Image 1 (cartoon, rainbow, N blue to C red):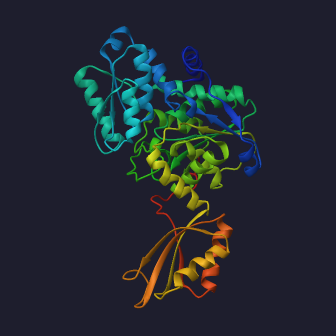
Image 2 (image 1 turned 180 degrees about the vertical axis):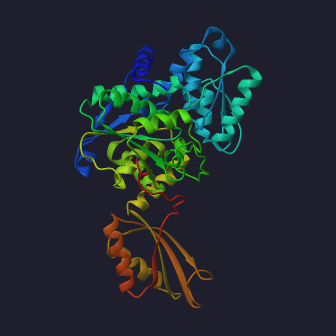
Amino acid sequence: MISAHDIVVAAETLRRVLAPTPCRRSEVLSGWFGGEVWLKLENLHVTGSFKERGAYVRLAALTAAERAAGVVTASAGNHAQAVAYHARHLGIRAVVVMPQRTAQIKVASTRELGGEVMLWGEGFDDAYARAEELAAAKGLVFVPPFDDDRVIAGQGTIGLEILEQVPHVSTVIVPVGGGGLIGGIATAVKAARPHARVVGVEAAAYPSMRASAAAGEVTLVPGAPTLADGIAVKRVSPRTLELVQRHVDDLMAVQEETIARAVLTLIERQKTVAEGAAAATLAVLLEGQVSVDGPTVLVISGGNIDVSRLDDILTRGLAADGRRLRLQAVMPDVPGQLHRLTGVIAELGGNVLEVVHDRAFGQAALGETMTTLTVETRGEEHLQEILEALTAAGFTHVERVRPATRARGAGPVPGY
């Protein structure tokens, strides 16, 4: 198990290649949550995530023979880019196995950074197994994304920087996938400030660390589609589980719609692009699961988000925030009804973005039509005002249509 000394040694190694990332106080979020909120901006690394830290520390420790043999790793994107980037600068061949459905921008970026990309399997676990096979068959050195002491120590240097930048820190909130990031940060923070609280946040679709902590042993979870693909890990490791059990105070899970809202909030209010996994730390505050009782640092772990997916995430965020409404209403299928319907919305200041008629399906009877509208609103209160006004105007079956929620979660695991 790593120690605080190991992290200090890792920091000395990193000092040659990486400058500390900023940790900025957010005036907006501090006002919202009634206490100091700070953002540790790991998305500002060259490859866009914290993974550069652990990747470099691990690669720098290779022997001359290991460097000559080359390395192999598995990743959904961030670790892949970090290994490719630092391996190229160190003159090391890097083979990277990525799931077949990895966002194209992450695949292209990894190749541009010098990685030899192999697409394999449906998810991270398939890619991980293939990378291990390649390591054994071709004599490559396997560089794990989280289950390695040097990798964890590298990630833990974030904790040292937080202690320097916010010496009075009370709570540190960290995204949790495989557990290497929070294991390293918690080790560093607790060594210096044992009474500081360290909170881990998972996507409710992938509660692998919560399940393992509750069971007292590594537990496989099935997983489900999530906006937070960077922490979509079905199985943690005994190494990271032990660190979490020893140093982490709470483990939480957040919903998909809140993750989307958090991504939107960071872009709008902080001018910061955070991927879903990174925004999970803000999502836990938005859900009210953690109170800001003292200086609180949110680790914004990365900003590598597929632009084609960003539109969907932002739309979901607007819907979760009450500023994008999709509603359905049934009305007589006669001239002038659509004008009357949109007139009610216009009088209240709603902006109609899209209109769809459905005469054959849904709740419309013969001679009626169900109309679905997408409306831009000012927020939840304005949204409810529009729905009530449409009902008062005589339209029937007036309903709000919410974006699909793919995963359900709960509060903290007892004992965490």
